[in-house]
Length: 250
Length: 178
Image 1: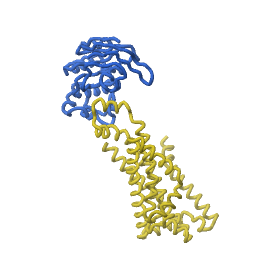
Image 2: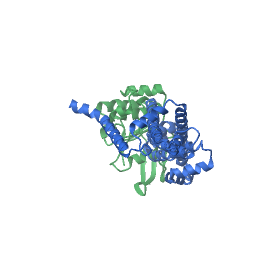
Image 3: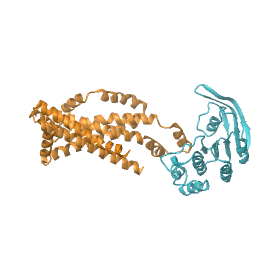
Image 4: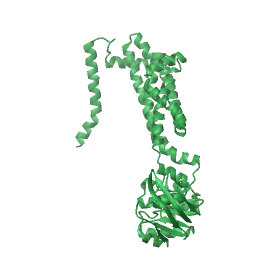
């Protein structure tokens, strides 16, 4: 029993070793760093990037840009869901937008945004655009699922609007907002990076990815991609911890 | 209070029609088979449903409801639930009289305990008529006696519904069948 438990703990390491070995084997068989650099070459490139100021400036700027877009998206998503929940006219007016934004390819938005605004702002806008429909959609569903019994109770005891909002509506919607916030951080991150690749703001992970590609520095390209993954995990952890702390307060 | 020629249909389905009732006693228990519309009648009297036909003379200005379902807010503790409608001191006192820990999380309470929190909320609210829909659901005989005493101690008119003649007896209520 304990021996299986110990060996089960080893599974993730074995899995990692397997894939790294496969990667290394494939890289050796191809034999061209330009097409597929091996894991050690990528690690080398990554370690070379780490101590440079450019690396941290790019990473920091990208994080700030995307986090700002993400938060803006959450605020706008909440705002839109309030507007469409209180007024049927606004719902009819705004709801088609959500479907259009959802169905439009990210690349179209990026190119359009590049026509409309400075390249520094394009990634922020893209992150926002990805977050708004998720938050809006989740909250609207949550509003539809509000317990009519509780709302009637509030009416019976003559709760003020503010009291009903604060004591029934907000707590009822908290799980929907939480799940929207968690789902959309990944979307915001990936679309933000994609926008950076195309728009190339001065300091950005996405721009670095693009430069690595045009200068045919494939190991750097891999190293930057690795960084994107690391920061993505970091940012998701950040959001998760923040939400957990909020949950504890409630 | 007098119910005169009251008719009500819900989603096209008639609940009752041309109902006349005299509700003059201070403590009244409505008795009727399930589906007869007791809850609907209580909500009409309490102003939670709009009248469709007929009238209610002497309807309460500010009724204090105990719904058939407890309708507590699970994200708050017992005290917070009751304090939403009254001062905290009063809420605490009522909960303690009903043997409920004010700090108890709603999800940790049994069915009968939740019922008592809901009852405490109804009693804490300063209304002019207590409208109690199956008030003793899930309580054992001893608790019913205590709860009934607490309700009667508010010295307010009571309109309740119950399937059990014994519960009506404990409340000293006049049973009205319809």
